Image 1 (cartoon, helix red, strand yellow):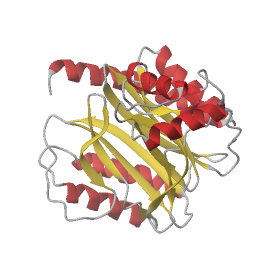
Image 2: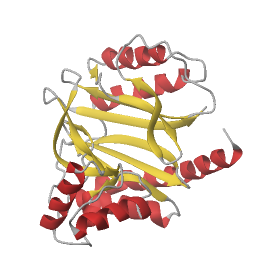
Image 3: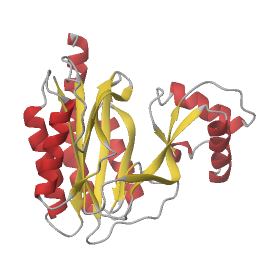
Length: 287
């Protein structure tokens, strides 16, 4: 890893450490998820970094990709399992983290399973270790608590302005003999559930990402495409970040036009297939 890249990763980590403490207090002291997300995102910017992706606030059986919608009225309540996933980027170098809290309780067994599995995985992650060996540690640890890992979700590599890069490290056991390469940033994340251990794509789509420049008719669609490149740096962005350009209905039509034209990719909400509760824990490491 080049020294400039390493310096930017470490700066992102330093800011991420502060954001992590802020985010934990934010989710415990505020009920409305729109306010929680806005506050965390504003804190990242205030501390001198940029957003790698919208803050995800996925509750209970939603595992990932839920970020508040425009005018979202969702509130958290006692016993909700709330997953906060955020990314800090400095010059495109991303530090990706996530944690779970159970509202009204100090912890929850499923959170403990996710946290312990991540700790055990981080102990062995280094260049030369086989992906299947890391995945086996994750599954064995989660199952030792009486839960299942989510088999179709993975830890992943990070690259400049790329949130999901190779290698992928599945949560469940596999036969992938590929070795972790040296000089990589790895976002290792663990999802534990009391369900069957699979997620399915669900709606609505609240997070999008630039894919390609395509001709589109709506003025709002052209503006969104311009913002996705210039303002969001071709990284994922939230539908609610577009509220300033038009009405919610016109934004919805514009996003559909862009999706139909293959100008944007969408990130559907990932929901546990059997409706099980999900906890997530994630940390980034430099190899």
